Image 1: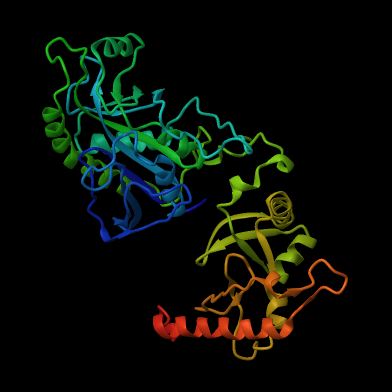
Image 2: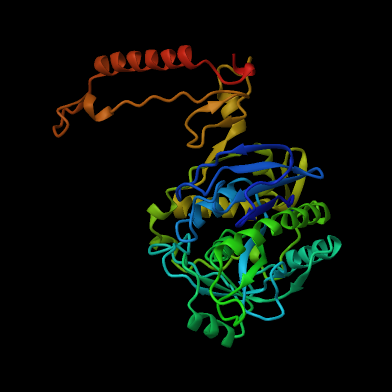
Amino acid sequence: MAEAVLGIIGGSGVYDMEMEEARWRSVASPWGKPSDQLRIGQIDGRKVVFLPRHGRGHVHSPTTINYRANIDALKRAGVTDILSVSAVGSLREDLEPGTFVIVDQFIDRTFARDKSFFGSGCVAHVPFAHPVSPVLGDFAEGALKAEGIRHRRGGTYVVMEGPQFSTLAESKLYRSWGADVIGMTAMPEAKLAREAEISYCTVAMVTDFDSWHPDHGSVDVRKVIEVAHANAHLAKALVTRFVSEFPAEHPPCPEGSDKALEFAVMTAPAKRDKRLLRNFNVSVLVTDAFMEAVEEDAEWPLRFGGKTYRTVKAKELWRKIMQATYDVAEPGVIFIDRVNDLNPLSYCETISCTNPCGEQPLPPYGACLLGSLNLPRFVTAPFENNAAIDEAKLAEAARIAIRFLDNVIEVSNYPLPQQR
């Protein structure tokens, strides 16, 4: 089983989280800019990644939040499970402001947001009948009980586009559907988490009665903000308790959220638009021992940082690597033991990695310094039988390019002491 890394998405009023050894860290995403930096730290010795959904200072409206970048950034930070907290309005008399609802269903009424990582050229349909992980729901319920927070298990969350609140007619319509709460941010967040194979749970914090309530009338923003801030300290208590009780290893989701893509991609490999896979650039180092395990059809441990997370058949893993390389030209495969055997500097260094493209083998703490030369510029008579490369001009250009790289090193120095 994989190590559990908890992602916390904070809604209105929850813009920071107290953690040990915490730091704000920027995470780049090919889907654009996330709502804010990720705050990465520990709670009770457990790794936690926090993201304020609206950004610190509440700078993003529900429609302008980049949900794809948010989920992608959390995935890149290693998050396996997401607990999302959101401010909502109540559609039921018995769900008073201050109540926390562990949502288990959604009605998506949004229309102006990117809702999938997939599209034309690579089509995928993930199962979504049960959008919330019941395992996360169990831990959320346990944490709410332990903290003495008024709550209810189960409820349907209508997600509207916003940023305006509901009309009276809309509010009455949603009540007639049997919905329980209404908000603006859980979609497409939950759908994207499913596509990213991250288990997901929403705890909705009721701030007000929606406009249907005869004694409350229109939603009062001032009162909503007051209750949201009052709920914020309870939300933080919930998160702290939730994290402390959560297992060290990611618990499998009974709804299959952590393996949602297993049979979801419909487009045939040969027909997939390679441009949709442009965000991937990775190489794998293959040892002689692994290839021997492939030949013998032996088991192979998936180990990282001295810890074995899973054991698989080496031959099946090799087949998957080769199939992916054939389908989308990724990952690159580097036979690392062969590289070290042929390395003329093997007497003083051991190649342990490469840059993502795989063309620059590197020792520990090695730096990838790459310069580019436009080779067609050095071709003479390009469309003739005597086409050739002007090696003298190429050598001169290479000499200058190398000097450029030397200058960069002299100006910037290496970032780590081990590299100097």
